[in-house]
Length: 333
Image 1 (cartoon, rainbow, N blue to C red):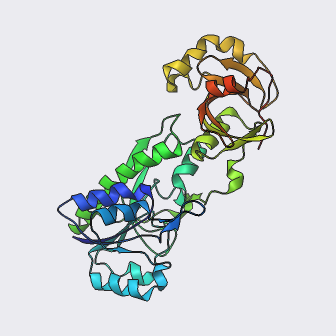
Image 2: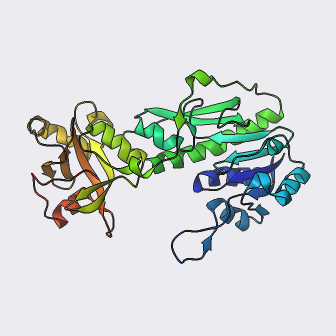
Image 3: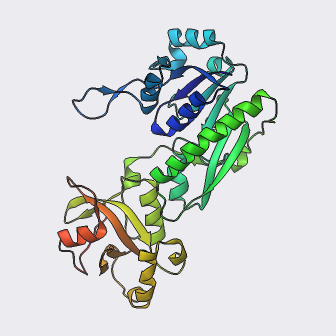
């Protein structure tokens, strides 16, 4: 099968590598976003997908606006591809492009459609506290993740999984699902299934305000926000920004889902649970684990934090380094 691959971030890399490694596929070219300056004053850096394509000596096309770039459109049309494979490319494809390949444009999307259509499905499903998710392959149409579905795969979400963990797992799952989808589609062994628009939910682009922590929210809601928008959620400590990078909600609903070193707090829980303080106040500092913070409902263990201008550190090291004491406060962002 002759393919053109569209993708940009690390999430798309396993899919590209899998297609390049399988003898059934011939990846004619890779379309990816233009190189970007990753930090101020530094040279342009290629996308992770481009880096793989260059290493494997696959032609790379980088139009700024693919649907209006005449040269790229001409090359796509001339490729006479069986399918265009799209994974987190980052641009909208025009009707003209969608109609070029024989089998259509096949997208790997990081949710169980029609849930979490849009730009950030992994992050928002964690924010919402979902216990499972998966990948969907679909035939693209002109809408935002609205095309008919082809295949799905499922995965359970652990209580401590963050967006990077989940994305890494899903990206590998996406690669396998795309191979299965392409082979079955070519053999007419898949019947596309229309999405139920009435059941659709949306995963919008993440905004800076989504990173701000408010300790009057519940412990589980804060935990889901922190792992969903990892590693950027922020509070304040002594008027200094403090990123909260990893937490654990405490209490009877969670002990069985936590690792033994945290679940051992169950032995102290009768005492800890009876402490009442203002949201954001430190109620206990646990040796080798870190501080426990009062929230609007429940208590939250801070497992990893990062003070502005400093390296990330464990909650225990943070407590020691700042001489944190019970009664000290971590403020809202």
